[in-house]
Amino acid sequence: MAEPPPSHEPLLEFLAVMRRLRAECPWKREQTHRSLARYLLEETHETLEAIDAGDETGDWDALREELGDLLLQVYFHAVIAEESGAFTVDDVARGITAKMHRRNPHVFGPASDDPPADAAAVNEVWQAIKARDKPRDSFTDGLPDTLPALLYATKALERGAPVRDLPDDLGGRLLALVAEAVDEGVDPEQALRDAVRRLG
Image (cartoon, rainbow, N blue to C red; front, side, top):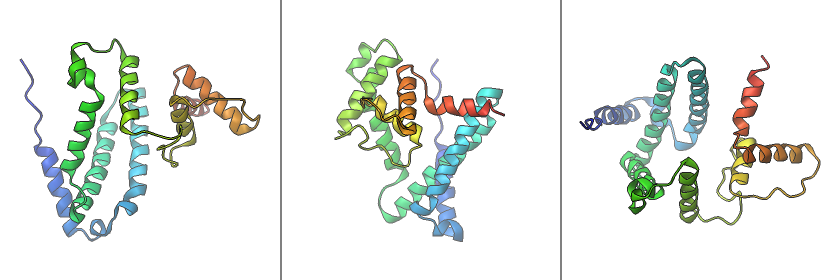
């Protein structure tokens, strides 16, 4: 027996809460996309911390709470945009739904009759469609400069940036280590984070 579809009432209730807060709370009324940027970054890092804690303890309550804080940021930005007529939270949801349909043809398209064999094959399809969606002129084109350096390097290398004869300086040696991690399928950001945690 199929499970009933999820209720959207909590999401609609939360949207109403955010609209009311924007209208009635002086601090929230003053906020802009720019002023909220730091909170989005903070909440993202707190969510990552909750994921690490959940992995260690098996207790996912902190992750549930942090995902709520992230959801607050999404709705906050969407309500600000709604007020200016730029877009609504429904537009955000429609956009990501369309993207998921487009980038997952093995689930939603004709290819769903002959799905890829494994996760690596699925990722190849995803990346190919993403490259069509967002053509780029270089391996770093479209990568935010604000990404952590290890992640920035990882993304460039995963896009096929060649690692030629690197200068024998610290940056070159670090990039070589990131390239080694990418080749081995290791997330260098997480590997370094885990190593630092072992220090103490």
